[in-house]
Length: 400
Image 1 (cartoon, helix red, strand yellow):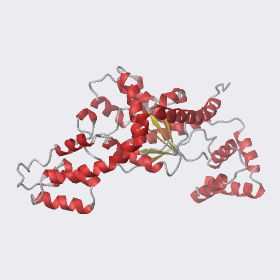
Image 2 (cartoon, rainbow, N blue to C red):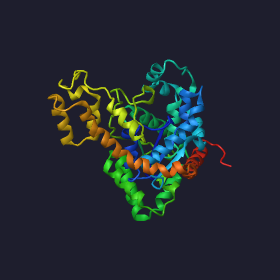
Image 3 (cartoon, rainbow, N blue to C red):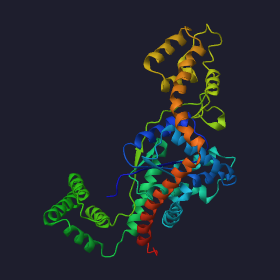
Image 4 (tube, one colour):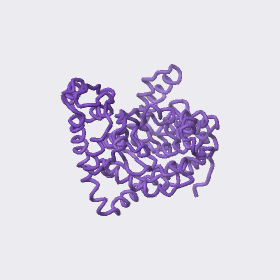
């Protein structure tokens, strides 16, 4: 099988805020230490809704990359790149579009939701309809094993799986496949070849999942096999054809839903965001002026934390004793709202201090970010080109 890989991307929206950090970046930082990760700026995806004014995309791309590095995404552990610098994404998207039913795109849950949400924009374009297919190409081209997503994105990953499955069914028809697979079995050696056939029979005739798992483990350990022979045997094992594109799994990530300063979703467009590298004085002012429980008109009025946007910040940033202090002090009017907000201010400042430190070298010398991304573009493109050679061959296209 192909090696495990995690792939994820973000549309370039400019500088990151705390909602991005707690919703996605913290998960990226944890995953990069667990297995190979590729994180990319999805600048082509930005055009699906900003095709009429793309002027912000370039600056937003570099602002976002700087914030990723400041947050702790490590270029020595993860590959950082820009989608449009790897043109193979577009080629795979084109080729997948030839065999993807139109109805699959129209049934994506977020399609109509986004059209309704962005009613002020003309989104009756193929680019907008086809963005889930481009999203699939972004992942399938790296033969990713996992895609970190929230619950609302699971249907997109399931669609990626269906697209990979359909592609393999249509184009995994390698001429002489069974004969080549049997030749590959012989390379296992007589003892392992006999066991392979026994396990294959047990799975295909009796549905023995344990036999399938044992056979896969044996193939993983068969270091004398070439990659192409290994993939033939995986396909032969399951009664399928040659495996060209890998079906990724959705990796559900725990996302802390940090609201904006007014209790709504944190968004720059709402004017309720705290930047990832906020100036201390600005940060302090923003939190100190946050609205609180409307019932607390006067300092002596009791309040209810659950009705207060500040409480949601305590849920994310405060330890249990501090949260208990807030609960008791608010309900008894024992503390004022400014007192309640100070631990949140202190915690955010403490969290952001290392981000400011990590960002400074890149601010001093922006060429460092561009060098990291140039290396990432090259590494990502190499992987993408390996996949596209197999895709082109399977579809009868020239690799010359």
